[in-house]
Structure formats: C-alpha cells, structure tokens
Amino acid sequence: MTRMTMAKALSSGLRRVLQEHPKSLLIGEDIGRLGGVYRVTEGLMADFGTDRVVDSPLAESGIIGTSIGMSLRGYQPIAEIQFDGFVFPGFNQITTQLAKMRARSEGRFGAPVVVRIPYGGGIGSIEHHSESPEALFAHTAGLRIITPSNPNDAYWMIQQAAACQDPVIFFEPKRRYWLKGDVDTENPAQDAFSAQVIREGSDATIVTYGPLVPVALAAAEAATEDGRSIEVIDLRSISPIDFDTITDSVRKTGRLIVTHEAPIFGGIGGEIAARVSERAFLSLEAPVIRVGGFHMPYPVAKVEDQYLPDIDKLLDAVDRSFEY
Image (cartoon, rainbow, N blue to C red):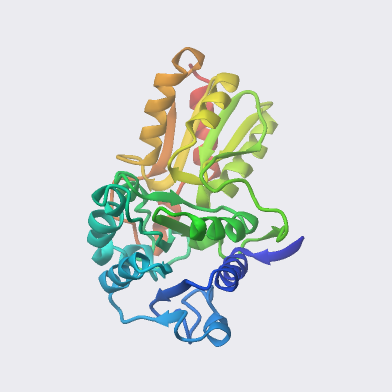
C-alpha cells in the first residue's frame, strides 16, 4: 500500500499507462510544461517527451477532433479538458463523432479515446469552473462514463479506461484531488464499470458517486445516532449503470436516496429512481428520494455551500424516507 492524494494517484496511473502502452499519449491545454492546472500530469512530459505529452492550443474542439483522428490510426489518446465548463466547444465532436464511430462503421472501427474532465464544485471557483454535466453525456449512447471517489479507484480506473476499446468520459471530482488514501499498486481495483457497496446497512440505501461519496459516508455514520443502519453504494460508472447492485441493496433495505451535485431535474438520479421503481417496486417502503443541486446555473462561490448537497440534506432525506 502507498498513501497518496487522488491527484497523485491519477498521475501514477497515467504514468503506468504511458510506460506499458507505447501507442498511448496525453493531449491537452497546459498539461506538459505546467503539469496541468491541478498538476496531475506534472513531470510526465520531462519523462516521456513532447510527442507523448502534448501541449495543445486552447481549442477543445481541436483536442477532441485530433484525438479521434489519432485513435483511428491506432493510437490511444487520453485528452484532458481543463475544466468541466470548457468541454462544450468539443461537445459536438464527442457526441456526434466519438460516440458514433463504432456504430457508424458497423463495428469495423472503434475510437478508444479517454476524455478526462475535472468536474463539480466545492472549490470556490468562478463561472464555468464548477459544472456537473455528466447527464448530458450519459444520454448519448456509445460513451462509457466513469468517475472515481478515492485514490485507489483513481489509480486503477484511469488504467482500465485507457484499456477500454470504447470511448470513455472520465470525470474527476476536483474537490477530491487532495483527498489522501491508500493505493494498492499491485492488486487491481474492482472493474471500473460496476458499482461497489462501500458501507453495509439494513434500513436504507444511499447511492452516489464521485465528490459526494465522502459526504454520503459521513451522513451514514451520523445516522447511526438515530439507530439507523444506512448502506452506501459508490456508483463509479454512470454509463453503464450497475442496476443489479442497486436493486439488490434496495430489496434488502426498502428505501433509496440518490444524490449527486448536478441538478435534480434531468439528472442521473431520476434514471436510477425510475429503474428501481420498475425492478423493485414491491420492495420499496417509501418513494425514492433524490438530493441534488437546484435547477439553476452554478452559483457564485460565496453561496455554493447552499447549493451543494451536504450531510444535513442527506439526513433530512433519510428522515423523510422513514415518514412513509
């Protein structure tokens, strides 16, 4: 075991990809000499050269388009979008080209591109630096979407994403870059495209992912003071969603709370609520409750604490679930 931050774990995972796969390369704004805004790629250009760690122009559409072209020539590009809110100039290439390549070619060509996107709030940043656009990508068939919540998952999931023959959107919870944890560099983590029960419980289930996993765990711990045993599931994969793990948990606990930083309206939580209602309706003791952001642009830094789900909001949702 090696203790490191999530940022360092991602850096170590990327280093291992570059070492083991000679056709892999990194491309993005300021990822080379600067080492990225969050220093995730720091030192990689010095060790692997400018051909494999490429400082791109400030053009997200160019980053994605170039990555697609390289993937069709046998390379394995890992593209970085500097901030979540900057991805939209490349959204067209991702949703109309990258996601459709395998279907368009009837399976003859894949586009094994990884798109790294720091996402979410909680860092006191300015406009367009704290978005949670995962639902926009999840609606597009052909993309795999995953997000780690801890350093060990970050280390292994970035490698699993790089090995995937489908395009992967890799969302990195930016407010957890400095979260420290043990990383087992010898034994791979669970498959990136499956959910994980990270806390056993019997009275209710909280499903979440990425930046809110520590919040959900803290809420589950606090709920023990009221004698409630809360199970917590780290979704890990947003597309595909591991509905079997969620359904099995709900059949045991009878209650479900789904939480994410993104707005509740049109969010991933709504899809989970609908599927669980279809698959485990007779096991539910209460309606599925969603906890998330408001349907509004992300607010200014001084009031973002009122926007983001926190322990109190989750505990309130648990209480409402037990009112039925």
